[in-house]
Length: 143
Image 1: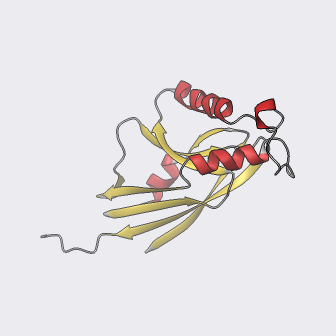
Image 2 (image 1 turned 120 degrees about the vertical axis):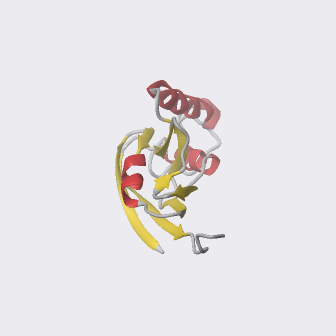
Image 3 (image 1 turned 45 degrees about the vertical axis):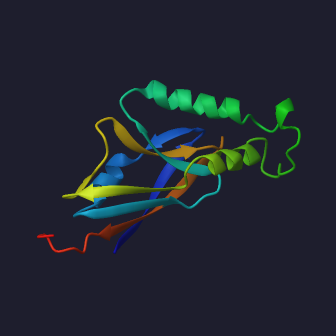
């Protein structure tokens, strides 16, 4: 099994594409598993052709889960790290924190317009870690 930790520098809430980093690292046939090691960030496979998709998704999730200072969020009690802390945990609970992507002949089996993204839910800059494992196909080629 091949394993590596990728570090993604963030600077506020948005989608950060890191498809190329994964694509340069993977090889062979099998599966690549990605897991974000933070409770206030997520992972997504999403369109990478039009930047508006990323900004619209960020705007949607901000509207769905506004900061703790918004009147609709007055029930929140976990406010130790600021108004975006608990909302970031809620967004991470709604979105995936791990992904599994097939590998075929050393290539990620993504669709034409798909990319791999870390979704940052916090306002402050962070260095986010994504742990990756490649599970290689162990079957003989003739099967």
